[in-house]
Image 1 (cartoon, one colour):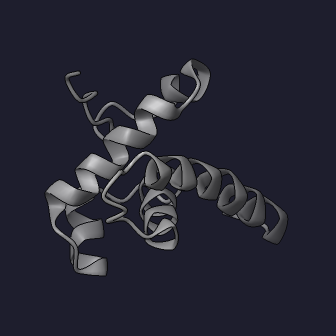
Image 2: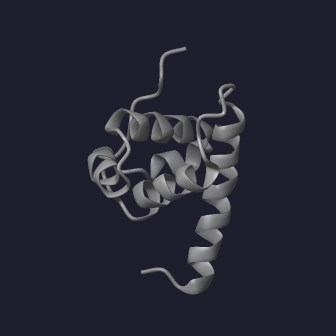
Length: 93
């Protein structure tokens, strides 16, 4: 369960990662608020890409790409705590 302080810290942390994802998109197709929402729902709340896609009316593949980008940006230590059933494989380069 989140306290107001931990929730605000989560939002700030995920918002920074969302900004990095959005800034890396040359076409500027992504909204950082939407990306932050996806990251919180997945990494903090444990929702699957399919659940998130249904909740916010975005394709599952778009959600998976966002999660994949975020996973690449996470430091190694937090990656170790992501449940294997939630982890998305890294994109090939």
